[in-house]
Amino acid sequence: MKLLSIKPQNILFIMASIAVLLTLQSCQSKPEVIKWQLQSQATKSSTDYKELVKMAENIKVMSGGRFIITPYPGGEITNGPDIFNAVKVGKVQMGSGWPNWWSGQHPAWAVMNAGPFDFMNIDASLMYFLAGEGTKLANELANPEGVIWRAAWWPGMEFGLLSKKPITGINDLKEMNVRIGPGLPSEVLAATTGAYAIPLVPNEIKSSLQNNSLDAVEWTSVSGAWNLGLNDIAKHAIVPAIWQPSVLADFLINQQAYQALPGDLQAILETAIKSYTLTTTMKAKVEDFEALHAFKNNGTQITQWSDSDIEQWRTVSEKIVGEYKAKDEFTKRLIESKQDFKKEYTLYYQLFGAYDNK
Image 1 (spheres, rainbow, N blue to C red):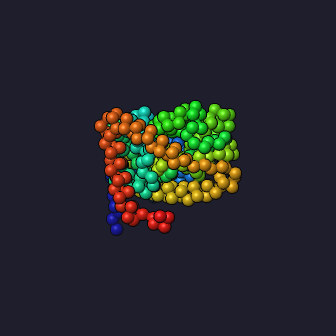
Image 2: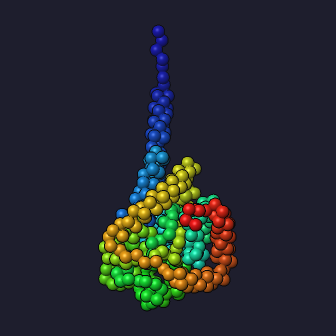
């Protein structure tokens, strides 16, 4: 039997080929891992932050460990209105906050969220942004800044004002220091009541109320206020939050980072965001029911605005919204788009709305 003869140079070639194949196989078994940072406005104890952590975990699982997003509670990398610029310049790849916080970028952000006498119900706002033209218009503002906009979740009707001393109506608020977010809500509150609007971020609120730097606090929904521990200090509330009846939170995504994602990871991110939206909105609203009982059981005295107060809120609100319409064509188009959608919503629900309390 004749033995196979291999020349030395061929042996070297075969060994080199095997090495290349092994290297390629090694590379294929270790796909690139993409890591993002997500700066939230929320406190670590809040439902929306806890759900962000779950969203990040789901993205990691769905991507097979290829896409890892690390959420940070408010203030860890940046905070408040600065979240927008942090996403814009790529300091973080994602942010989560409130549209009215970005009003320093463009006046239309101040009216993107639900202002006074805007959408009254969560479902109206959900329809407008998820099925109407809301998200399209928001991205007309965000995309030129290198940012992609997505709706995050809906707290819906905010709680109102919590205070140490009773507030029974508009007249009691004159010259008080009131914590409220920036934009249209704070402008309407200041013009209607004569109060001073102080746009503190959440980690500053409780201590400011404790040391009497604030007289009253507006902070998201009933469960949001409870989770912030305001019940320990403020034993009085006046409701509802006329200035933000159907508030929504939003996601900001760095456009360049998003476009660099493979198509499957983009799809995973979009799917995870939609899941977060539905889960957080519904879970937080049920928690509002529970938190209302908790406030009452804790001895909080709850007062409602009078009919005359509400009409005064309406008069001032309409004047300020008219001023926003005059600022620029885009802001006017956004306001009118929302108003037109509300008309259609109202017309439909006049026939198909709840009938048991009529």
